[in-house]
Every structure is written in C-alpha cells, then in structure tokens.
Image (cartoon, rainbow, N blue to C red):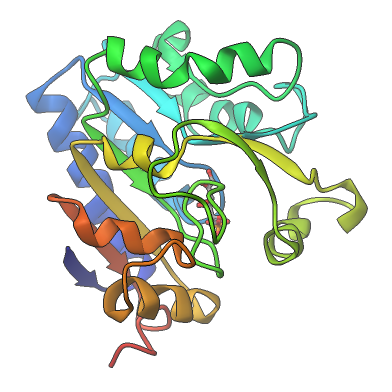
Length: 240
Ligand code: F6R
C-alpha cells in the first residue's frame, strides 16, 4: 500500500487527477465508485474537469459499491440518487453504462449477476473507496468473509448511527444493504481510498498497522498490489 497525507482539498484533487489520467489513457475505462461524504470533493473536481474539456466520460462504464435495501433509486437517500445528483447529471456520461445495485424489485437477481457483469466489462480499472469508522469498506462490516462477492449485508449499529446524519431520524436508516463483497473489491486493478477526520483515525491505524483479519474488513487491502491510501492529518493522527 502507498500512503499520501494532505488536506482534504489536496487529496481530493490528487484522486480526481488519478481518475482523469485513467480515463484519458483508456477512454472506455471501468470505474468503481463510492457514495458518502468522503468522495464528494473528488466528484466536484471531476465535474469541473469535464466542463473545462480536460476529460470526457462518454465511453466510460461505472459500477457502484452498494445500495440500501428498501430504497427506490428516486429516494433522496438512495445511492442511485446520490450518484446522479453529485456526478452523473453533471458530466457527459452515458447513464445506461452507470451501474448501481438495486434496493427494491428484482434486486436479488441483479445482485447475483453483478460480479459477472463487472467481469463482462473487463473488470474495474480504478476503484475509489471510503472507509467506515469500524473499518468497513462498501458495506462489508466486521466479520465479512474475505472471499465474499456481492451480497446482502446487515448494517451494524455503528454504521446506522454514522449514516443517520443524512436522514430525518435514525429510525429511517435502512438496516440492510446490497454490497460488493471484499473479493469483488480486491478484483479491481487499482484502488484509491480516501479518509478524513478523527472519526476515521482508528480504522486508518488498523488498516495501515494492524493485522490482516476479517474483524477489520479494510485490512484485506494490505494484500492489494496497487492500493493508495489518501488521508488528512486527523485520519492519520493515530498512526504517527
Ligand atoms: C459508500 C460506502 C461506504 C462509505 C463509508 C464512509 O458507498 O461504500 O463504505 O464509504 O461508510 O462514509 P463517509 O464517506 O460518508 O464517511
């Protein structure tokens, strides 16, 4: 694993540059995308670069990590809504090539063919990840098998509490999600992970210094051949 420490603006710009470099080198790149607060500035940088003509997404395909079970894609807390609102609606991407797991309807069928669908596009070239305060990546909570593919996950109390900030009330936070598994994520050719804030400090310490264990899902990244961890000083504060 490589490590980059900087302020949020700087690391977000550096990650956006990685995406731009990737897409300019391979216009039909397959990008793995995350939701949450962590990638917001990265996406804002990509929108800006697209509007300035520095990159085009017209031939790109995307696969998102996860979706809440029970939310329609039109629900303002669904991850499909988030992606449209923060990225897809503002760039020249072909939305039919954007894949977000479903949370309703035939979501189980869609989930079961997700890894094959990614493989049929040639696999993910560049994957962005955030990280949960409990060390989860996507919705792979502590205890998730390292060889997991896309599956249904029960959210832990800590994740429900963390995510409740975006809902009117904690009781509205779904308790289940559909998520790419740890093996699905490890299949990406290149991974960048972004973490900011003191809330992430323990997870980053465990990721960088801890043993590789299913109790800390992110620790599987220690084995990835091309993974860079981007952190701010607060997220890095327990490592020094
Ligand atoms: C979201 C996802 C989650 C988040 C994590 C951190 O698609 O996969 O693992 O990356 O929960 O969330 P934020 O960035 O909101 O702190």
